[in-house]
Length: 169
Image (tube, rainbow, N blue to C red; front, side, top):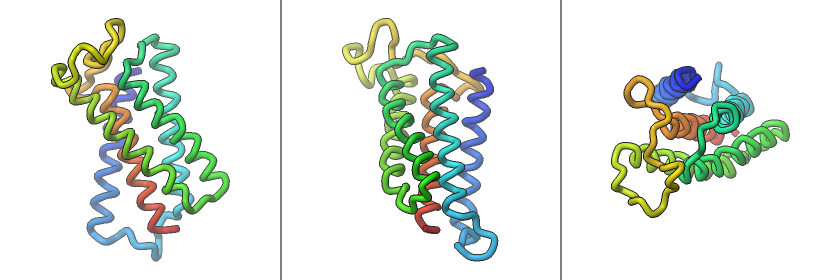
């Protein structure tokens, strides 16, 4: 299952790069053929819900104990999923105002956690649990994709989608 999650994270990376490239080339105007803001928020909501369910799978079914930084990322992702679903249902044109800060915080935490996995001395031994250290790599697919990388990929893609929806509202 971790391999599937890693492939999904890489798909998020490809989608993010594609959206950014399209935006930079100027093809992302609000004119003909543009995707609606509501559709962008809907995709963002699906991604956040999927990431939430994936993290619950890892802890509750695969029995991987979340470390301190995993919990911080969950604190950003779980409400993000709820906010985006509610915003999508209510057709809230300002949902990006609530979602983007959560994406930024989550992406920052994921990046820090990913760095800790590479450089354990960054944080020291006093802030992480002995039973669930933040430096452990439960997943290391394709030689670089870990759980924080997966979460960060979703946070960044959702942030890009919300930013695009902001310009279409």
